[in-house]
Image (cartoon, rainbow, N blue to C red; front, side):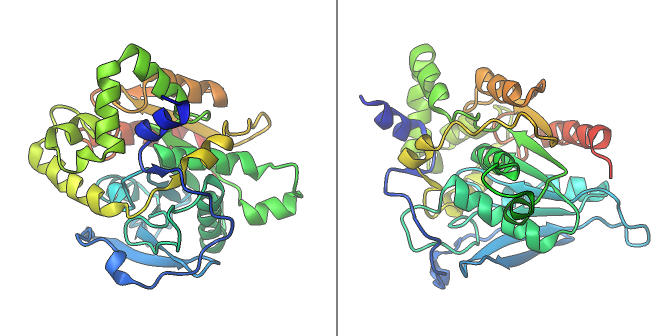
Length: 340
């Protein structure tokens, strides 16, 4: 089987259709939105950021409660991965981080969650997704925020970081295209080279796992198979009723693939950023069924940092049963490394 076929099988939420060359016009068909909407928690609001293309991007907002003494901490902007949307952050991490002084914003990438979908077969590219995030940051914040990305959302953030100091543009141009960040947190992120390395390691060292990943993600069996959904995203101790709830939300979250696989691979690896002054935290999960230990280590080496591997959680550490373990590690890093 060709490499591209193997990658197609084991890459979640990807397609081999041609890449978009322009940003699409807005789609106003509400019937394409999630049929099982996520119910917001106390203190949360659902907003829609209008992009230059005319498309509306869902934003779930939860600000800190420091009314009399405004927080000096940077805002946190959360970016999900495949088969997810803004709701995956709103469940636990938005309430947690807002309670300790951080204004929080969770985005749904185009074609995901309650965001508009483009007139195309794929939602976008690394460039267009990063550009949409940059547009939101440019319009929303006066001070640089922290980007927090999960899985493929982490890869998009890596592309964003690489373009902050792109030598093709002047400093002024880049600040407008890709505004500065106070920091970045990569959560169970796809490594800079993409997940081709993960694919081959699974094929040769864990063939049973490779088959399960293929069936779960490429064939979308996680949407209907409860035990496979749990094995793919959660630890074995996760309660079935919670897995069923998130399974339904994941099934409704993604209306189209995030990327064109061939174009994605052609754009990788992410360019190195040797002179970047951005603080980066690389954090993964010991029981991650998708991003293995070598994938986590690769991302750490790329940024010259020692990754944190959280015990007792799986790929979806932000909604796993011990979701607070990773949140506390990130909070410690924020407190120790980022100061206004």
